[in-house]
Image (cartoon, rainbow, N blue to C red; front, side, top):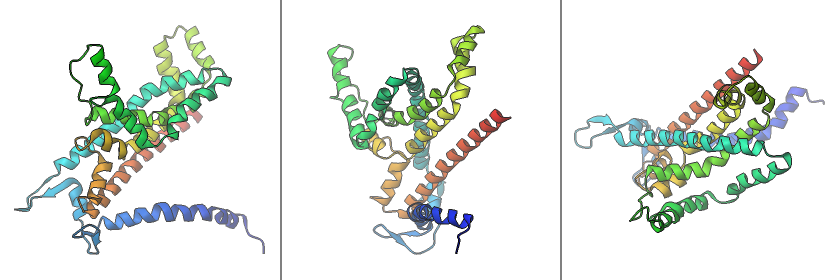
Amino acid sequence: MTVSEPSRRWILLLPAILTIMLFSILPLGIVLVYSFLTPGDFGNVKWIFSTDGWFSVLFERDIFDDTVTVSQANLVILGRSVGLSLATTLITLIFGLPTAWFIATRPASQRGFWLFLITIPFWTNLLVRTIAVQEMIRSEGVLNRILMALGLIQEPLQLMFTNFAVLLGMAYVFLPLMVLPVYAAVEKFDFTLAEASYDLYASRFYCLRRVILPLVRPGIIAGSILVFVPALGAYVTPRIMGGGKSMMLGNLIEMQFGQGRNWPLGAALAIALTILVMLALVWYTRITSEKTEANHG
């Protein structure tokens, strides 16, 4: 009995489909179900349908008179998460684009070495890398010691447990995720186009804005998504660098499943975070498809 070509394709795809369903769709479905249940007395859930989890994402009810108000704490954490994620993306782009350009313009025999240096941080655990940044900016850290030794400050700067500390830590951690896709785009860039723009008396800034950036845009968009998505759900870096003062969505979700003992709210927040990530991916797909159509048009 011969197997048709479509059936053979489905058979070959079956392991991948089962893996996605088992380790991605099924856990997400469980979290979705939990978001519509009632919190247990000491964690877990009661199998009683309730929308309080989703209600508590944006609103809160007074315990005395049931007055409904907007949850300022959750909105502040959401705004901080989106703001720090966007700032992290921008900073990694500012430093990542020149780095990728530098590597792409090296001789072919040297590019592997520079890429090797970029990938070295991936060999180290995320926790270790975050603690390394903490050692640099804490009150008794390297930065404060150098500034005090030079006489620039009289007492240590309090940089830890601030939004700046979280931003610095995430920018350091996610910088390679920006450099690599931008490098892949710059490597394919035809440098004779830049030379031609100079021959036509274009300034360096004009060449960058009208020639280089439009052609390396796919790499920039891919790098921005690779940085923004994990930064939005970051947990370790905000937990260590921000403490309890600069909490982000990942920390809020963990708190609900831990000491908060409100699993439905934690599940609702997790699904809301997933929706934000999906919207970012849809935006990325739309931008890249429009760019592709424009190039082929």
